[in-house]
Length: 366
Image 1 (cartoon, one colour):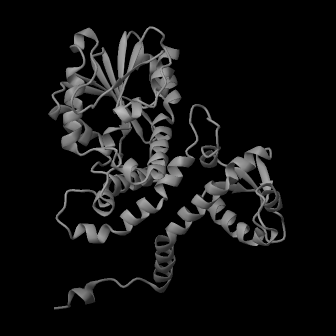
Image 2: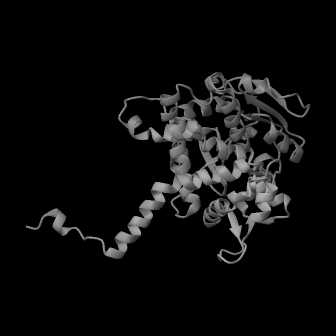
Image 3: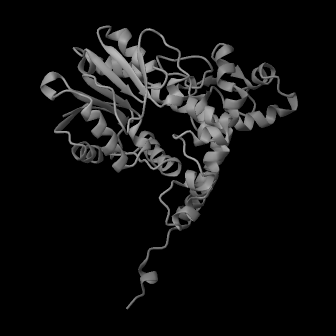
């Protein structure tokens, strides 16, 4: 009888050569992340925007006040980032001066510029590529060998992202993470208002934005639907730093203990940071805070929904899932996962209102 090894089909030479190229790509993907971080720290997207939306390498070297000797090195960074879609290059020929333009991705990296309601995501890039995140990810294999409940991030650094201990250890890094979470959570909400705002908010008299931060989302809701009285719930260390605006009511508290009563509760890009058990606890508090369904009671959940398709968006969903595993006790979920959590939290039914990119918009009914 032939052995199992003899029965296996050996890859062809062409397949092995392609496999080697794929090995290089996977082993060196972090170089793309570091080049990406470099471009953000140098301010290249904002500089291209300030130069009218297109810039050559000499333009960038001059505008960024870089040493002229760094031009050939900058070319190599920009060539990689253009290949990966961060920038667009009008010409890649060696004998032609390439002009670099913004892509939809780099439009999201303009300092101080909100593009169609998407605030700058530079802090997200800096947080995701920070030493704290990279070191936690580098320790994955060691973490798997340990019988610990803590995430790799907490196991390594001894702190979590959400209980204030990070602020005590490294206030500067904590500020970057807080900015990253705020910009990420507020990104794309105007699209939600345009695409399904009428369905979600028309007729509501009151709403609590659970973990609503500085109230950016709540203010956008009030602007579009002035009849809604909005309350923002967040931790005391967040609320204490938010100035009163006369538009939104701010409440310091903990969503695990109680949620201010309202006709509807909004919880946006929060639950993926938490375990299934914690999500059930949070949603159970949300359910206590709303009236029966026949009185308009509902919880609006906006979060990532992993689908079964292939392509860049699906890859991003899976990367975000592993990021949650490394950084928190949370995970990304498909619709079945969400349905099970809603049921365990005591809800009777739910509806998928819209899928916007990787985000799903749910109405969950008591």
